[in-house]
Length: 401
Image (cartoon, rainbow, N blue to C red; front, side, top):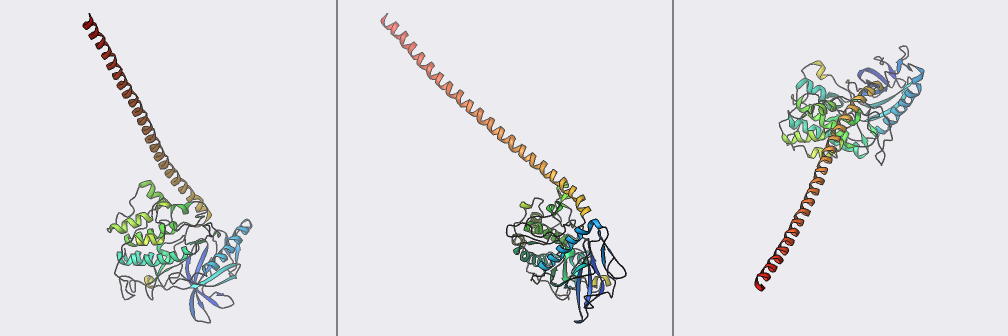
């Protein structure tokens, strides 16, 4: 299914060394630039549910004719998005250098990041120290702040898409395969495939078609979930589970400030989350400790096993669930959550209605009591006047007769 080692691309310019990762819509390879003697990573557009590869010449063909238009549309979008991502210029974001078409598909060339993912680091060494985790999250947040300023959502922030660069331990945000660009009105003007990374995707990403309008809160949810994983070593529960079981997601975190920041970032309702990356980062505690370089064995694995020291590319082996069939299944979960939210909303509406009815009835009763009170006062005055006149009449009768 994938290109074999020693396959050449671009008329011998790049030589394939190995496969680095594979997802629903693409395969990432470690390659060597034959003239520069430098390693790069190349991502190949390969929607595995719709395409086959000819083993004789590495060309890609569409499995069924009925999918031709769909695959062609997705390939053009892949190229369009690669061009947009290639304009990004931030030290914490992987850089795209070249885009080309070959073998009946499309490719883009990016920096090869030698290091280890946050996901693999935590799996090998357990939860991170809070000071280290928060400093790394601040740096990833800075990269997200940059793309949000360009009205772009990453939509796949997770530990396996953050590489700790071996040279300096700097976190690099990778895999913009699900990223979307939005116009000045916040409406989507690009349509990359939608996907779900369980435990890190916000509830609005379960909707068919994904996130259609620009919102920093979706990436904020994922960044908060990533920090939660770094501090606990456990993949966060999905929004459905949080909602249905009323889980206190940050209960294992000792620091109250961090706990509150993560809880707010991962609110089910989008509008209840932080409004911006800056707001989220400002709610985290300020740590004075700095991350040391690779001499720190507690941060970067150097000798635990061959697998740990094996360089990773700017793409994860963890596959994003992005096929249409799975999205349809996940839509059911989203609808279930919507039903629960609607039920809660209806309960709140009923309570509010009952309170207003009670308030209305109370006012009516008070008004009625006021009428009765004034009627009694008037009746008492009338009685007093009548009594006075009867008394005077009786007195006059006695006096004159």
